[in-house]
Length: 50
Image (tube, rainbow, N blue to C red; front, side, top):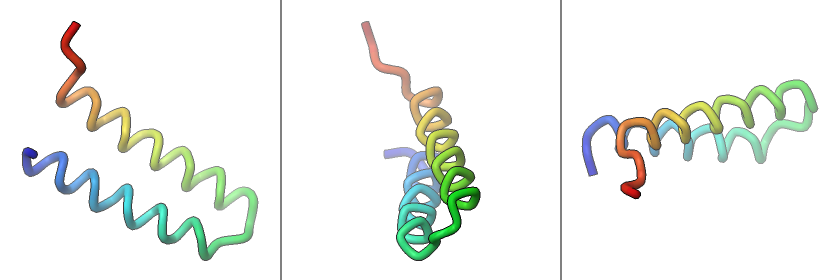
């Protein structure tokens, strides 16, 4: 795995843990958006062939 993906995975894991501690709906939605963005960034770095 490349360094960028390792960093993105670290961020995704961080926000997933944070999400379990937050009860505010607006904050939850923001965290979900950040996780989705990092997943999309990761996919853009290594798109699926075919």
